[in-house]
Each structure stands twice: as structure tokens, then as C-alpha cells.
Image (cartoon, rainbow, N blue to C red; front, top):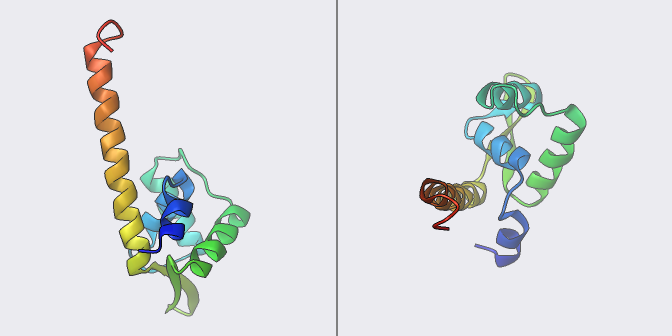
Length: 110
């Protein structure tokens, strides 16, 4: 794993995290927007400008690749992208566990 790439993407923004989740299977741009919207129950609404700027950066960093899909340009996560997504998921899990533990203890015990 390239250390500079790890430092660039960990911690990840929510939009990058959910975009990488969405391209575990090949998806074109509009399908990514719909998938992220559905997965987050409308909490994250990707705009096309945001999406395509991010997709360009992720592709340049070999986090995703372009693949043919039903005549449209689609994107799919690479092994590098998967490793970083897994690292971020573990990091977020630890963060959540710490937060839940402190909140259960209450302010006096923290």
C-alpha cells in the first residue's frame, strides 16, 4: 500500500466512502447517485459536478477504473480502492465503539 495514498484517503470523506461502496459492482454516474441516495436514505445527495470531479480523482489515484456497462461508462473499485475502503471501515468501527463506550459511561466517568 502506497503510504501517500493512505494518508490522502484516510480518513475519508463521506462522499468518497459511499461512492466507493457504490462501485463494488460496476455502476455508471447516475446509478452511483441513486445508490448513494438510497443507501443513506437521502442523507447524501451527490450532485453531478461533485461526483464527476471525485470520480476523476479516484480514477487518477487507481482507486476505481472505468469499465464498459450496457453501452455507458461505468466505474468499479480496484483492489487498492477495496483495501483503503476496508481500512476506513475498520477505523470508523473503532471510532463508533469508542463513542458508544464513552456515552454509556456518562459524562462523570469520561
